[in-house]
Amino acid sequence: MQALDEPGPSKPELDQAKIKLSIIIAGAGIGGLAAAIALRRRGHSVIVFEKAPELGEVGAGIQVPPNSSRLLLKWGLGPYLQGKANEPEAIRMRRWQNGELLSQTKLHPESRILYGAPYYVVHRADLQLSMYALALALGAEIILNSPIKTFYETTASVELFGGEIHSADLVVAADGIKSEARRVVLGGVDEPPVFNGFAAYRAIVDTKLMEKDPEISWLLETPGQNLW
Image (cartoon, rainbow, N blue to C red; front, side):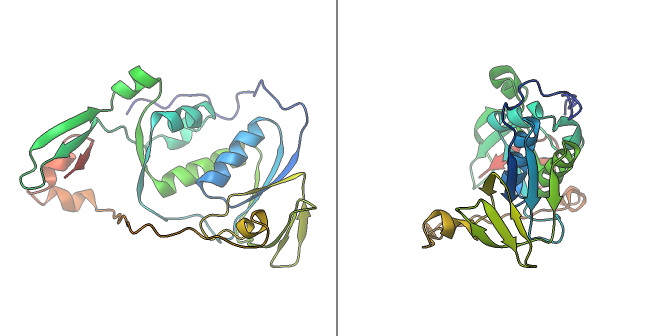
């Protein structure tokens, strides 16, 4: 992978907001951390409340296409992803019966040439922890083990389960699929996501074990995505 040498958080942000706001963000997932990074770069005061006691190994590998990596690198995430993200050479479609290559979409270096940004694959936890470190370096306050009990829409404030009330100019709800804020936004009646009948199963396999299996060890010869 090419060196991720894009500027880090020490680079001054030239386009500062004319009016600085105090902002509360619910959730320190990828969405909440992205909001925290972007808002801090504009000079806003940011505090993030996350219900999990720690950020750890959740999820599996995810794809970061050029339209996303362009923003992440612009924000200064490059140094934090060093050694964690990889650039696959291609997405390869194969016949399921025998593995015959049917077609491929080239990704590296084509993504950098065509779109001006790389196509990454990375473990979700590595991406989240990298964004967490960048948000802290930019001055965001992130408080773990702090679930929000109540959102107060008219006062832009939240109440934690410990009874503490925090107020701001704006509250951003990024608290995931089981969002407590969604009910407030929808006027008191929650509308949870509807299952569409499809499911995706993800898993992580130790490459040392794959190397010992002649039927699949060839998958490690070149970085890429294979679909049967």
